[in-house]
Image 1 (tube, rainbow, N blue to C red):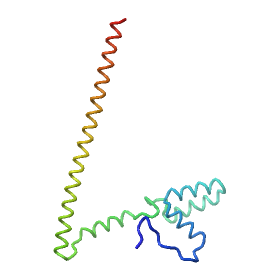
Image 2 (image 1 turned 180 degrees about the vertical axis):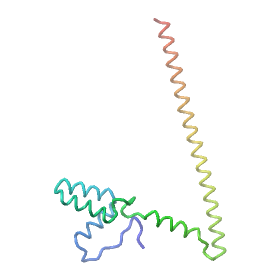
Image 3 (image 1 turned 90 degrees about the horizontal axis):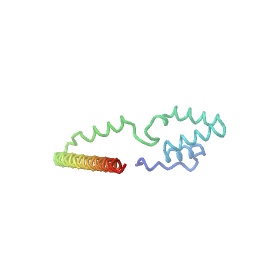
Length: 144
């Protein structure tokens, strides 16, 4: 089974184009774009051919060359919510999902508290700086 970070091994008789395509896919969308730009710089028909291939193969519009589509991700999420038919496993799965949802809510509350604390600290610093500048302005006015 291959994952997003692993690719299927190429056959021994794979040509240089196939190996190049697999290498660019492994490096990601940025490598395809860099190859296209270099193609335009050195010999414009190569850049144009790469652009056409990227559009034709839908590499240009994916979030990454080796990532799943939104439909596939949604399909897997729906399959995860489907009952398995085993009552013990379904109970375990629902308890685990409930616990994970609680942990997510607690973590989001923690992040919110951190944001509020940071906002308060920045506001307090702003007010202190403002008071300090006002005090300096008053002392400068008295000296003059």
